[in-house]
Image 1 (cartoon, rainbow, N blue to C red):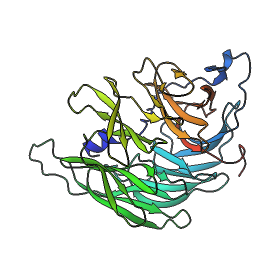
Image 2 (image 1 turned 60 degrees about the horizontal axis):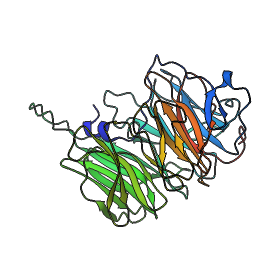
Image 3 (image 1 turned 135 degrees about the vertical axis):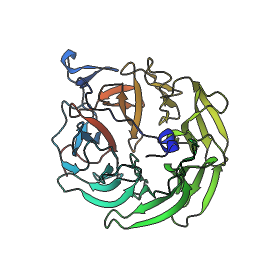
Length: 383
């Protein structure tokens, strides 16, 4: 069974379950997305493409696609990843390439905590398994220079059955660097607790969120020396949805420290450790993310949809009601790719041009859960 703190704090997009309804194909008209059948003109192609992974409910395989923003349809599968039935798949692109690193459930077990594996994928090639023991539903971190890191662990002993429901299992957790060519791993940080989450990279440091019995903190770790710097020594153990803004601050969702009915968006200066509150809401699905030009993107409530504050171009509810979860930002910071999510519906991928606020559809296979790995180099369908 997954530790409770892991479930509460893991920053991940919840996958839709079997029986979900398919989302309509969308086209961009001006600043809005509309069903393709209602669009009077074709969407203007955008000079960017994303890698996405599609998993049908119950499937034992996930397909890799390269999709042009605003394109008329998604291209054919370029690679197929095999995994357990209905696996959770998360992925990132190696910057400047068409290589994708993806995690997926591969080892059947009642306890799924560490049942995932890391794979290397690229168009027109068989996926390569790199390492096992990866945290379930975790997303790899890829640095700007192309170094790959994952969260791994070994389950600790189950707590005694003494009726204390607050007592959780304590695991041996690591952050490991993975060699993309050989799959060799090297531990850069070890922690005993409930969770170690890769929150981002800043000035050569890995930013980690750690939860252990009686504590939760945020630290910076040198991936070369292993030196650890405490940035926030004590925060509530419910943080999620991390991103790092251009000014060097970690933006994330957290539970209010005094009001159990409230959720907040906080900004942590990674140099000074100063925390600034950006938003408070009764809505638990705020899904905050830093915006390329310094603003804040989040969903204040499901009825409103995505709102971007402090941006050069206004963005408000581009796809209407729902929770919009940002998955990737292009290297030139011009485009933001996101998933529009609603209960009992498949997620809808879309993109926003940050300088203008224009919205572009991202074509994707119908009837599937979608994971956006990131923006890729090269033309659609090429190697």
